[in-house]
Amino acid sequence: MAKPKVAFYWNASCGGCEEAVVDLAEDILKVVEAVDIVLWPVAMDFKRSDVEALKDGEIAVSFLNGAVRTSEQEDWAKLLRRKSGLVVAFGSCAHLGGIPGLANFYDREGVFRTAYRHVPSMEGGNGVEPRRKTKMPEGELELPEIYDTVHALDQVIDVDYYLPGCAPPADLIMEAVGAILKGELPPKGSVLAPDKSLCDTCDRNESKPEKLQITELKRPHQTFMDPEKCFLAEGVVCMGPATRSGCGERCINANMPCRGCFGPTDQVRDQGAKFLSALASIIDIKDPEEMERLTESIPDPTGVSYMYSLATSLLTRKQLGK
Ligand code: SF4
Ligand code: SF4
Image (cartoon, rainbow, N blue to C red; front, top):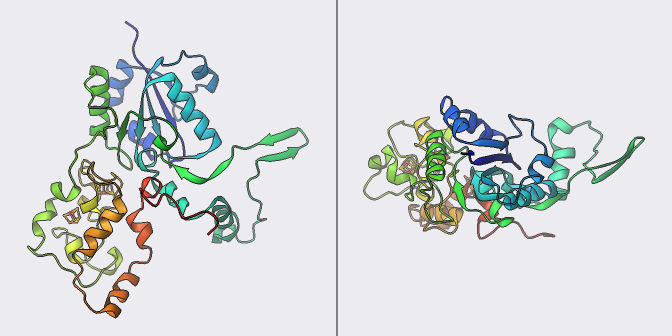
């Protein structure tokens, strides 16, 4: 019997999700044995024409990582949607917009200005920015269009399932692959991870006092972080209350607070707003000046609260032209 065809593709991402597949270690052999990989740019030399030659729906499942911020990425996403029975948004950037989605605090010109003129590594550079078309002696070169707004995958195509995480952990990937191969999938649109908050599964939760109240916020490098104690109770911003569990508390176990890469649980529409509301509920300050001092102690509150989810939040982006 023919093996199910599977595709892996990358859009605007750092490459970590590709590493996550390689990190399956010997389990990758089980995947390769069970499926026929028809596209995997990081590891195999397939061309776009190979995918175009497939019948619509012929690929059983495509795993797409990365956000969508260029016309080329949008084209690929639409092509793979047409050719695939199932599409899985793989990792935080495809799921929520992820770190690339923070570009939505700017527009394309702002991003170019910073990246090609103002960052210290570009000092003394020639200030050349990417252009759609460039005339060369050999002919005209064309680059994909870079959009003002970074999109999560489901803002561009229909998505069947979401594998969260930066990057998704090996156990969740293998569970998802197993469920797809056995046809034992949850309802369409499900996030393939537990629907509980990270605080619910975090060992440090028990260290929280009965009434949690804080009067100051500290950044990780400004304090000794006791490996047994809840970060929030110690005044260190931790996104645990607003974040889905399932990562195995990877950052917490490395004594670093959660930054929210698994996104919110099903009950939460806006992860950043949920976190800010949770944080506000434990701040024990009445004096307005003291309150201002505390808010100013977080250098980038929106960047922290929406680090992975700005593109899919209620804010979506900064208003263009403002
Ligand atoms: S706030 Fe962070 S450290 Fe505290 S219980 Fe939640 S996930 Fe754990
Ligand atoms: S602790 Fe938070 S940021 Fe770290 S891997 Fe888990 S969900 Fe992601």
